[in-house]
Length: 193
Image 1 (cartoon, helix red, strand yellow):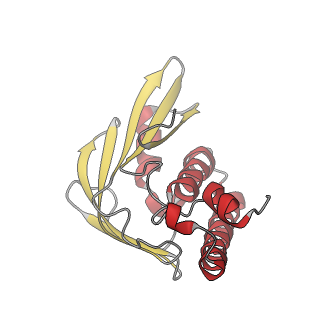
Image 2 (tube, rainbow, N blue to C red):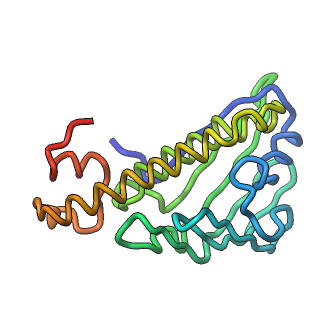
């Protein structure tokens, strides 16, 4: 059974405060293409990644060392049919001590299997949370940040190409008018990955 929202978590050998600070250092783990404040309740910031993805996010909950919640106010994707799929979705970071470690539970509420970008976006969040955010708190981000951004760019390019190929070949995509995920492209194009 699919989860109703995209979720992932990571454990680190650092305090909740250190994890909270790292999660709020959005340019440090998500993208250096962030404009605006990411560390204050009520502030807004903009994310822009080439012509692939851009969004405006507002911080709607900010509980020191425990929780941060973002509201996606505006969103654009170049690689899916509904470019605004993230509009109104909620992104949260719940941080808690678990034994000698700190756990961060990440949830993107509204990013679910019924929307087109679910597979690609969920994979990206997993890479960022379990990879870049963990690397940032461990002091390793400088060596690995490019790897995560390159993987996201390649995934978006592949999905955009598959959607175009599927549309051009008119291969039954009307079965999934809003959901051109990789698995559904496999069905439409009989492509094996």
